[in-house]
View 1 (cartoon, rainbow, N blue to C red):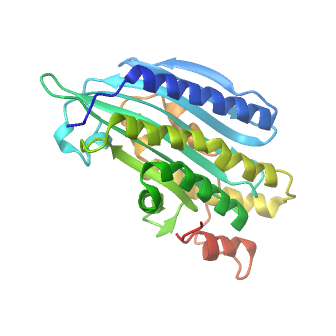
View 2: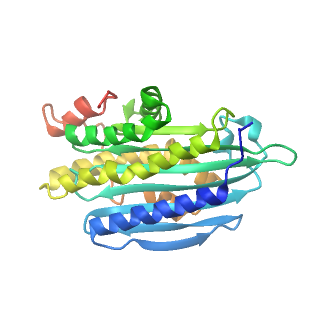
View 3: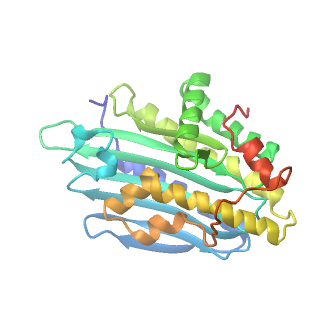
Length: 307
């Protein structure tokens, strides 16, 4: 049993404010406006999807807020917690994915969320989850170190070096394509079930979640500010489209958020906004030895201590 009950109104106010802050900064950076698309879910709840397509910088990007509820937990939520099957639930969070057009600018993902499982005559079971990770196409040590340093700074007040190491390693394990035996990118942070064991207070769990959400802009924007004008050609765009295929594979096969959204009857357009607009697959393609494309595999798609 959790130590205390989450304040859902306070959580929702933070999540909606975070979405607004991030979209505001991204619009200033890109120069174009995100479309606002409010939606309702017939089974309960709804959300606000903020999407940009064919922007000056972002080829596609989405920053979503959702708050949904239902009478029975989806299978993706009970797969590792079967004792909660049959409970009513509320779930809310902010999830974003940004796909720049320039291949020298990495794709990025961030998510912060809260889940509450409810049953008559029983204490609510709640937990927080979230994280962020970076997916470059052409790696750059300065960029990867900056991103990981920002992730580390977000976690240190909530458990120090050991907690940062735990969440970094969790991210490396989670964002991994088992059928390819390959990481999705260079990692970052990932956590889930924070508070579900009854050992973490609401203030601590919510505090870490806010710290991760608040760290996102400082983790990502300096990278794309440095790289946005890097020249590129068809070769780089072709490799970017090929590597984006890995992103699609992970999101459709492994990602908990995607599976939960689809299984719970969420809004498909909002769930699949995370997919890149231009993608390619090739049969048994291998990068040329010594090339910049080969360096991505040899140097960057290897979990390591970047800070």
